[in-house]
Length: 386
Image 1 (cartoon, rainbow, N blue to C red):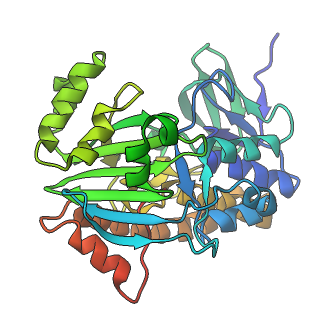
Image 2: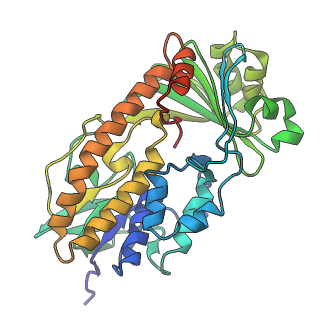
């Protein structure tokens, strides 16, 4: 007769937050199992550049014992920034001063760093969690899409916006923020798209106006990753046939008809398919009552718009803080989770409010002036990218 496998600690989701948690636990001699729905670590590309903040993401990497390895992989020059208006006039430009406060790294490189720092077999690929239920005494049964189940003494939902674990704790669901993105890439930009490469520069790029935006940055492979963004009805993206890239470009450009040709060229010259994305967020004050044996981190706990630049940083910091709390309360899961959630909730609410304010600033009637004012004020604020 087969016995149901039991894992002392089960982490659902091998994103950055879940991997930092598993690594910090490993540093403290605590074994964990990470379940992820992807077929393997290279099943899909991992997105663009991240700027890793000193007080959150870098603090997490220090707790994981990986800060030196991280510094070796950062993208030189990535802390530069430009802010333009819809006529492509540069209103603010900051050079990368090399202070390393917000160094940039490719998300895939950072994920590989974390995966390589875990014992073989910690991450179980192709393990799609479809449900979890309490068994009493803080234990849970976790069911996978293939019908297999396991039990765990501590269950952590690190599985993102549409978390399968969140319903054990909260009835909250992400809501549409009113902003829609269309993502695209220009490949080998210095050679194939020199005008666009010169326009965007080496770091973060904002072009704002009319409740719309071009947000872009240079990737380590020489490509330009561009997000077009605008206030739109939730069903707007569904009116565009993204399977027909030419038609999708035309439909998107209708909304930027009076923008500078150089900005419009970011769409017309795109080499990749166009990828639509709705921007969702959980309530700013999202929290839950303590439920034995289960908690959340990252987007599962506090999904917010990307405009405060804290999503990945906060997920990593959550993972490090949770790992530390578990290590500091050996044998007492509830004390660990109470300590973790006691700082998680106010930290998340503070950053979610900041994110909502940043969204309003970028899509303000007077944009880009409020953003310029923020960066030129004496108190420096976050840069608005994960």
